[in-house]
Amino acid sequence: MTDERFPEGTEAQEDEILRQRTEKLLRLRDDEGYDPFAHEKWIKKHTLDFVRDNFNHLTEDEKDDTEIVTAGRLMIIRRHGKATFADLADETSSMQLYFQVDAMGEEEYAFFKKWVDTGDMLGVVGYPFRTKRGELSILVTRCVLLAKALRPLPEKWHGLKETEIRYRQRYVDLIANPEVRETFRKRARIVSTFRRVLEDHGTLEVETPILATLAGGANARPFQTFHNALGINMYLRIATELYLKRLIVGMLGRVYEIGKNFRNEGIDTMHNPEFTSMEVYWAYADYQDIMDLTEELIVASADALGSRDVVYQGTPISFHPPFRRVTMAELVREMTGFDIGEFGPGDDEKARSFARAKGVDVEGGESRFVILTKLFEEFVEGNLIQPTFVLGLPTEVSPLAKKNPENPDFTNRFELFIYGSEVANAFSELNDPLDQRERFQDQLKKKEAGDDEAHVFDEDYINALEYGLPPTGGLGIGIDRLTMFLTDSRSIRDVILFPTMRPKA
Image 1: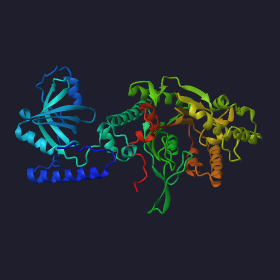
Image 2 (image 1 turned 30 degrees about the vertical axis):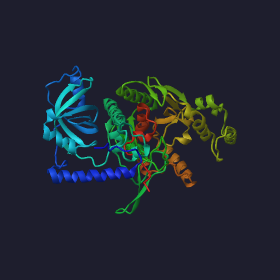
Image 3 (image 1 turned 30 degrees about the horizontal axis):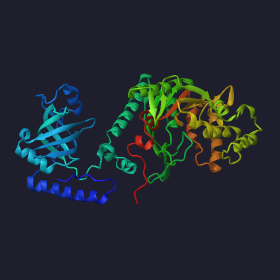
Image 4 (image 1 turned 45 degrees about the horizontal axis):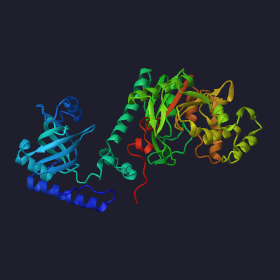
């Protein structure tokens, strides 16, 4: 039989192989009375890792009498007359199989040779042995075809690189690239580590609405839909914050949620419209406590993956605590010479002129505090490679954070940056309902002036605050971005199993 693998992009060749294999499946049913999809289950007693861990001591040409019962996908077949070598892959490993007439019998071997192809799911019974060339293998005595692969594996199955195919057909990507499977296992370990740390701190996991009548908790443009029965517009949530803080009002103490948020924004290497975040709120805590918690969560995640020293896209990053802690004003002064302390209430135009001279896009009307954030985004953000807590964000851009009592123009808030990207956002929560109402009104004016991402006015949330929100520290961490940095993944699409894609024409 000729090699059925095909060069990437030859769609016609793939369609022809699909046709041939479909005919082969029909003949298998008609000629042999064998349906590979009829098996309800296969009792897989051993993984390939088990075989490797327990029989790696075998010497050349040595066989063990332990019967192995395993299963997986055939990745490569190399036929040599009355003997065949093949590579079997399961969820975490791969191993060579040796099919031989003497070990299987004429009938069993003939069935395998005639009907089994690369990509097929196979149940295998055999014995571990090491070949004369020194490769640990399984000598097959019996095999069962569990599922017929009608589509061929891509050429060079171990290195499918076409990103469009990888993201659209993640199932092919997972088959072809074992390292991709490992990335998502690492992502799962990060999430489970978050849960362990938070639950060790007595934090309750909760669920809040994904579909709501208001999209609050962040400055972002939401996705809108329509509820037919109620006859109202509804929105996919952009953050879980306001619901979680309602639960603190309701005396649940410490709560967290890991779940999906949705923002109607562009798509790039750091942004996907659907993303996963973890938000946590602790009653009777402040942003300093939450900063310590953030550090603990991230260091524990690095430990769970094996090292606090990682290399991201060729750049070493250290997750050894403590992370640097520095104010936004200090960083902007270091990088640009702009000292916010030298600009008073009447100096907004002076601040705008400074920004223009630096080449920053200024619309006109921005306050000196907004200019501070623009300078930070333009000249500082991208240089924060090592984990850095940026403290003291302006009150004007922090509608849900508590003001710093010593300087109310700024808030007790921080953002954590890694490799130039924001990974976490946290603050001492604003719990004064009168102050919150004023800030919502200010955001409403911005929305009416055309700012689609300004925060909505949430009357019920203010109503909740009027019952009394204790001093509270809150945090949001982007699971996707953190996973990128801990797994050396270039794009956010590499750590989301099914990223958002434009439909094929």
